[in-house]
Length: 267
Image 1 (cartoon, one colour):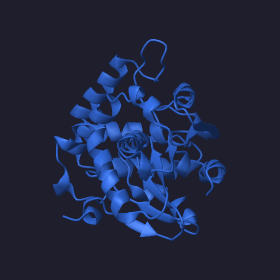
Image 2 (tube, one colour; image 1 turned 90 degrees about the vertical axis):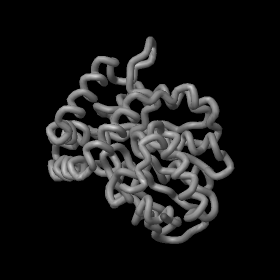
Image 3 (cartoon, rainbow, N blue to C red; image 1 turned 180 degrees about the horizontal axis):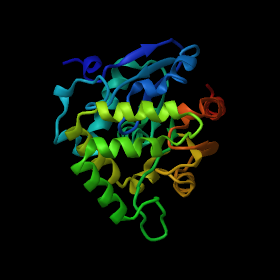
Image 4 (cartoon, helix red, strand yellow; image 1 turned 120 degrees about the horizontal axis):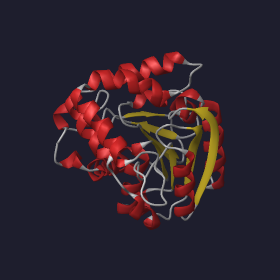
């Protein structure tokens, strides 16, 4: 099986550097439609579906491999190796921001920078760290997802998307959630929401942009501020937006932050 088939890789544009766009839990590469074509005018842009999501090859879903984010990071490195040219900037939404982080630690020479949209290294509160959820919150979320995935998706997707003035986006995210294989979604949710990558952050030296929504149920501002303090060479930009998907609900503001970051690293 080819990497292109496994992850439904698409490439648009050409340029001296490559942007690799990777989506969050329950999403697919279509979530980048307001940004990837725009950057395809200046860069080589690679979009993909994480295995188990979108139009990826479900036959490639290895339950053991994807029992941690490291399995997805290994896939990302293969995609970068095969499809990228020149310096690579990884653009990761939500959990994919941490997948990009793990890939960057394994192969630092492959990445010139990281753009992280709504990232979270840990969703669970721990002492002074405020991730936004208690362990009981996460256990309840996972239990509900396990017992009634479609019901969970229908109720949670609008809350995750936010964007109250753009209800069509909530409907789109609900549809995307509901198209995901329920068993795979349950597994990926457990891996995502129980992950803790805080100890990995000091190993990252590549420059990073943290795009933080001003009001985000999944990744509150405390998380963005923590990442900014912990990542040695990061830039934090807060986008006025309600919801976890500013690349969809506030694409212009997200692009402004990205452009500033790209200029700062010479692109």
